[in-house]
Length: 239
Image (cartoon, rainbow, N blue to C red; front, side, top):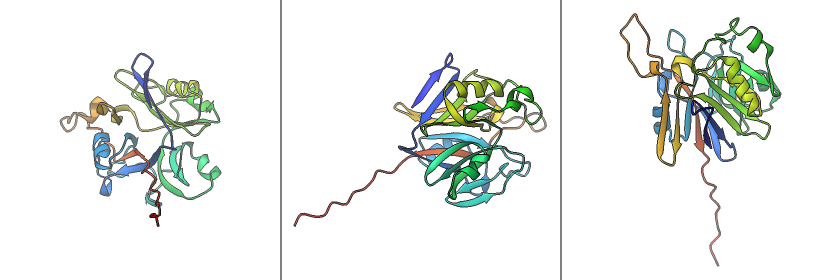
């Protein structure tokens, strides 16, 4: 379910894990890609930027896909998305130790902002000590409610916010655990609707600037969501 709220500038996407599966989505070798490309290539229902890249083009943080770690950790990143036993989780990395099981899919992200419906104190008191928290920019948040539903809070056209404002929206939506995903100039997300695919991209993901001025902000890793395959029940032939 997708909703437009707060003056049609911030989008809220709510997804039931009972109907959808979650995964890390990327190209071989972690080449930069786009949300619309991930949507089409992997037949996804939803795709959103997960994390950014280092100067060599590698993702910043660990990536897990199909039960295998394909990129190593970045120690400073405090948030994560992961799937264990088919169940998706979003929030601080402490959840990794609290949830039993092996990681099946996952991406290390930054910064985590909430646990047990409580916004971390550093988000409001020291927003610029570890990240550009006071900067007004495009934002992207992934969180989970107590009932297991996954909720994304996403900047839309003109819907720029600081980190505290983003976290407060999540709290008002009754989200229990939450982390920011890569946003700002790199934010992209795509969603399938009844009218066809719908895409949002920030300006710097679309324009190729001249070298030395600005850099096109494209990411290598996305979080992908796909409908579960229908269950096939074998019916024995009539005798």
